[in-house]
Amino acid sequence: MPPRRHPTFRQRRLGAELRRMREAASLSGPQLARILDIDVSQVSQMETGRIGVSRQRIRAIADACRCLNDPLIQALGGMTQDRSKGWWEDYRGSLPAAFFESAEHEEFATGTVKVWASMFLPGVLQTADYAKGMFSRRVPSLTVDEIDLRTAFRTQRRNFLLRHPEKKFEAYIHESCLVTRFGGTEVLRQQLQRLVEDSYRGNVTIRIIPFKAHTYPGVTESFIYSYGEVTELDTVETDSSRGPEFYDAPNELNSYRAILGRIEKASLDEKESREMITATSRELKD
Image (cartoon, rainbow, N blue to C red; front, side, top):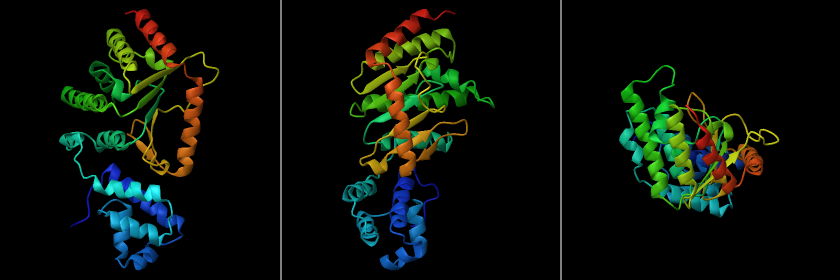
């Protein structure tokens, strides 16, 4: 079977963990290839997600690298078993690849997904009109059909969350997001009302960081921190105008966990946050 041309987020992440395991053992690619009795090109292709890896091969790599982290080995083995097709595949060829990676990142998470929103409301909590208001401000401009397609995709991301109540979603939102009027005043008013409704869902937590917080608690860019089956499989996704970027190195994960700790301390509790969203919605004027 020829190597994959476009490995998925999940396939690349599995490969990255295999590379990290090899490097922790101070083994080169050729050295690991000799131990496993495979071609050296296969090591490179496994570590970039371009070829599949069996559960047995992962165990062999772990043995070669003297890795004793059995929970991680088991979790990586489980990743090889999931060959299900994601709902986003229906959009492939119609949208940029970055859209699919964000959706797969959310589905890949087996634990809580935490979001820090500093500029606009989290995508999975957006109404269709709010999303359209955001996409309509893109430079260069999108056509009406392109805006509609992106909005439909974002709605699908939201529907996935609602269909899976076992998925825990925590949103930490700066107050500035509650007053930025993507799509206009009425669109924002309806969006805030939706936020209040979502805050009552059993798997959704919404907390606001007010302007009056003693300091700005997070980084300037929005980010998503997803918890994996084991800590090593946690992932951070940052948002930018050029698309998402992903981080999974241990020092990077430690840094973002510390940032999340500051954000949580500066946030209002759920009841206070709900009251602030409701009050803001009532105060909106055209």
